[in-house]
Amino acid sequence: MQEYIVKAGDTLSSIARNLLGANGDWREIARINNITNPSSLQIGQRLLIPKSNTPPPQNPEVAMVRNTLQGVYPPNKIAISFTTVGSDLIANLLNTGQQERFAKTRDLGLYRFGIFKLRDFIIYGSGLLQQLQMSPSEINVMLVTAANEGSLDAINTWDNQYLSFGIFQWTLGSAGQAGELPALLSNLKRRYPTEFQYYFGQFGVDTISMDGVTGWLSLNGKQLVNAADKNIMRQPIWALRFAIAGMDALVQSVQVLHAISRLDQFYFRPSQTLQGFALSQLLTSEFAVALLLDHHVNRPSHVIGCVADAIARSGLTAAQIAQGSRDNEALIIQNYLILRETYGGANAMTKSRERAESIRNAIATGNLSPQRFSFRSNRQSRV
Image 1 (cartoon, helix red, strand yellow):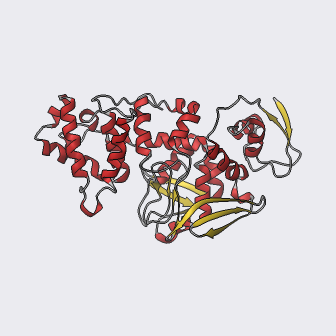
Image 2 (image 1 turned 60 degrees about the vertical axis):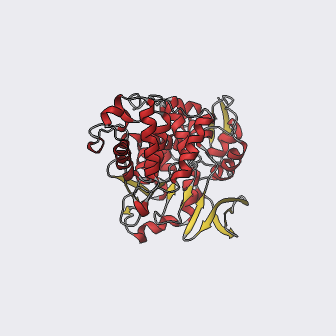
Image 3 (image 1 turned 45 degrees about the vertical axis):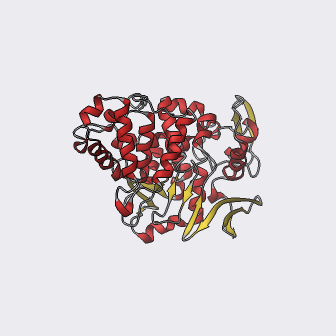
């Protein structure tokens, strides 16, 4: 252990970064020093600092953005203004003079593609990845599916969902409708209550999750239901707060776990629409699971019906497919991909063909298997 005396302008994040390296964990410093409120540091306070464990190298671009934004967090303790240059939205950190182009303006809000890719988390967050107990198959499927959606710090506030966040672009929900984002934050609150409080709770945000899949957010005790309520979340400060949260490895780990658990909603459940079978008994390759998960993220209510139509078109029964060969599965996938381009009519899947081609390319690069029964899940091992 070493001792450090807090100076003006210090935060736990900046202390961890300066003394322990780019991957230094401020939470470990807080734990050792019994700090429950990260914003309560006092000038002259003495802190015990653990020895650096020589953290793994980090993507330089990721480190730079984290140092600029996360190092001066939380935003309610610093002065921030927002300006636009063309379509760029600039966060001006007034007490440090730093500026960060963190989003693009569009229509009523903004969007941020983000720079924290799932692949970065898998490479640099190996310890947390092991804790998630994900199988190699699940990682393969997540990588190719996330590539069609967004980054871990991606934000969208311009469309009728008011606020979307993360690798699967979980939404706040349209006016009067529950959304998937509250369920993600509820999961974060359950697993890492300190992080939830740090990034969201201290600003008045809480969750009302109805079923673990969708729910509502509340702000300062008021449930966000109608358009006027939810429109508050279009404000740039909320985009900044979510973007910064998306840079935290623990928040990222919850995103990954929440994303793969989406399969529990539809893939492993028997369905009368599928003649009493579950998709997990019928379509068993990594390629098939990636296609199905990608579809479910984009149009969740379409997946089962579209597969059922593909089975009917093949002339096979579900029982024959469950007991059949790779050729039978390939036939169903072929029919399914044709049908899903128009399934749902005007509300059909967005860019179905392009997304499927992106996933198919992962087979050519050896990152996804088309072999029957190649998908293996660790869902029973996870808490």
